[in-house]
Length: 496
Ligand code: NAD
Image (cartoon, rainbow, N blue to C red; front, side, top):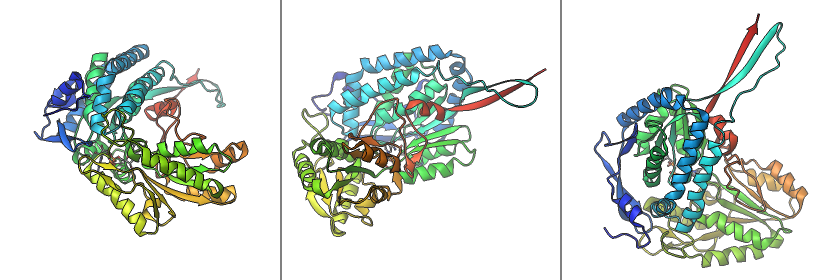
């Protein structure tokens, strides 16, 4: 096999491994004996293989997670959990280059973003969540029942949690789930996306090295059916946390009803970007481009519906189209690449089909629109104008570098908010204006879990992240994430 010249010896050595499952701290062959090819989306070539688990492997992983939950992980004092999580963060930093290279070659995202964004971000997430272990106590309560009472609450771990993640941000999605679960004292059975298991497997090794006891973090690689389904339905799992499509989120919710396990969902989006004419239009246009073209639009919070005031429309659209034409599209590991490929042949076909259908339904192709080359899965940064509700490109999540742009006039804020809210999704949004009244009025009217003002992105571990409506249930990041992995117990003592 020939490897990309930017890959270090450490990354190459990891790619060459026959990856197995991680159960109870051991590398384990999958019961099926099957393996899946792992593809570099920048070339379409096989770069490694991973084990394909089945429901019997999920049973083993759940049993290991239960033993670890009732045994070592519960005995470890909160301050020691913090120390282990901080050590885990340090190990991630020590292996930052290798992790970034593996993330880039497997997901297609340019190396510089993997190195300076994802890897830095997951170490921060571990430290942020690790800090909560000693601070997540309960409260005492002044109750009004007759007699004398002592009442308080305890915050306890939910138990064994199943975590199912997508392929777009393999490292981030893994750590957004692992870190709060570890901090809360839960144990984990995680299924990475079938396309992108590599970095999760590598951080699984680093977790053990950091002192996370065997069985606390188990990794079962494989397909949605059977592995994801087995996790969602498993009677031994107390909570399932899922990030992925709304369609699969719905299936997971149904599968979880057997034991009424807790469910949290981070799902799709069709996030609006709203630009008022008084905004810093240059900054807004630059942010529009990065919000939709960053990681080839495979971002749940991508700014995929753009509303620009008619007085600013031409200026903003010219700047966005210019940027779309200038973006350097290439292999994630090539120096200077600003946008990589989409993840797979299937995703390439899906995105180009949407671009085609948009034009058939009356949208105007303003920039891009085609596949680039015939090796790897590259799509041009694409801008469609004259899009409207009822068109698939406007209504559905494309998950590719495709922007739908629309004009608004001197509509009142209510009408504009109604257009922005006319979507089953409600994940992110951004508002561009210098007028504080307009900004805060819009912020209160948008049905979205995240409202950004004069930016489209606010990636910080402390800020809750999640969606309204069909974009999900619950919030990751911030203390909200700890709440999702804990139960609150009320203890009432009647004093005699
Ligand atoms: P997907 O729903 O196809 O797959 C997500 C995960 O679920 C994968 O691990 C997959 O193997 C597994 N899965 C598939 N079928 C399953 C089943 N029947 N039961 C259990 N698990 C199953 O999503 P994807 O294509 O990997 O990722 C793209 C989607 O993820 C987009 O819709 C995007 O918006 C969403 N996403 C949301 C967020 C967020 O925070 N809201 C973040 C990233 C991605």
